[in-house]
Length: 75
Image (cartoon, one colour):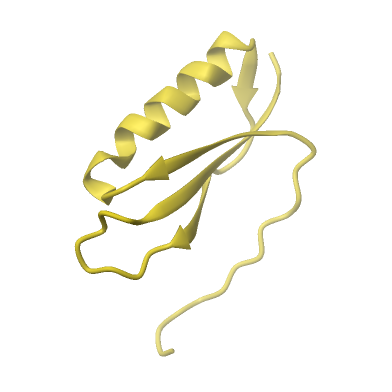
């Protein structure tokens, strides 16, 4: 795999995680819901958000599964 850089992110003690199902053109809605939950729990984001592509094989993205991870800490 040419032109790919692998970066290891450090472990974090706490994160809010969610799952986005389907196409990437609506993933912003899942991120917004996740960040609303962060605020509702009185937490603050503390690092770069992460996406883990659990299933991303089909061209139409209808069956894609993406895990959303946001490191957090108490406000």
